[in-house]
Amino acid sequence: MKSNVLNLTILFVLLVSSMQLWAQCYSSQSDEYWRIGSTYGSSKVSNCISTYNCFGFMRSYFENSCQPTQPYYNYPPGYTCPEIQGIKNNGWKVGGNYIKVCNEASANIVYYEGEGIDGGHAAVKVGIIGGAQKYISKYGSDGPLVSHNLNGSWYHYTKIITLTEFWSYLGSISGISSVVGTASQNYTVASIPGVTYSWSMTSGGENIYISSQSGNTVTLSPLHSGSAVLSLTATSTCGGTATQQLAISVQTNSCLEGTYMNNSSIIKNLNNSNSVSAGWVQCTVTCPNAASYTWQRTSGSISYYNSGNFLSFNITSGASVSFLVTARNSANSILGSRNLTFYNYGSYRAFPNPASSSLKIDVSEETPVTVVIHSLKESCLKEIQDYESKSSIDISDLEDGEYIVRVYHNGKLANRERIKIVH
Image (cartoon, rainbow, N blue to C red):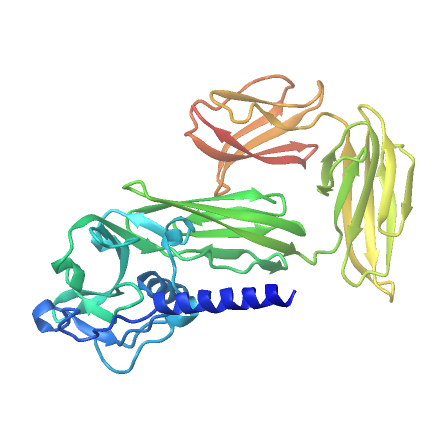
């Protein structure tokens, strides 16, 4: 046992020693060796620090806002922040926070590959100094941090560059991940020339939905408490892509918000009008600071059971039932009331989805409904009064994209869903 511990200790010491030998500054740190000076259009930003390389500097610059003091060529003081970020590899290219762009004007990073440049090299564009666009980079972990022109860091004079790529820092999605209340929230990433932005809800669109979007910014509006995932795909005109997601929790704190289950199926959000299949229905409502709940059947003849904020009943084919639920505080003052309807008239869903030239609504015969098709910005594009079961709705004049379909029965919203049209 002691022998094994000793062997492990020796192995650990050797490993640490080898890492220290690998991560060290080159023996020569002279300006001439690194081709630093006005002759080369470059200047020293700091001495060598062996704990970070070009990628460590780049990621600390953008991700940690750890940036040298302008005008970027002052020396000293030294630049030490990237010790936190460490030595990074090319994983930054696929992480979703950086996107390849088409030219230097749209970029704030240049990436090189070339003869003798192990793993590539990255430089950060920092601004114009003395009439020239300046970059800062650090060659490997053994050289100093240098301010230089686009093609002015030392190795460009001794190495052959085989690949040059321009990249820009997109950043992660900015916006709160825990939404409390029903106020709309904005989410954004960096606005980059030549980049288009596509936002969507990967999940939880029934809890918080996209109410508007414009380029790099999207607005979400909460509907129900729960969880959701906001997704972004950014695409440049030269084919660069970046994808990322943000998990969002929603707590609306709305009085008489609720969920229901139908025949022990998955839990669904409670709407004012709810389409259910024949069988058992169980629903639960919540209200902050409520001490009691009362249920009153306002239409239908279905027997029901209730206990506090819980309600259950058995619905038959073609039947419907409505309730008025009221929440009160400990002083018996009304905190809120809500009308709820449950019906077994079909799913009220649009099909097919995606659709091309036409779509239909799943309703039983002799069930009059109104169908309204909206753009994602909520502008009304089509309204069909007294829609008849199994009839087709012509959508050939609508452009490819996503739309909102709302179905109303007896003036109440029966279903709301997002559809895609692809001609």
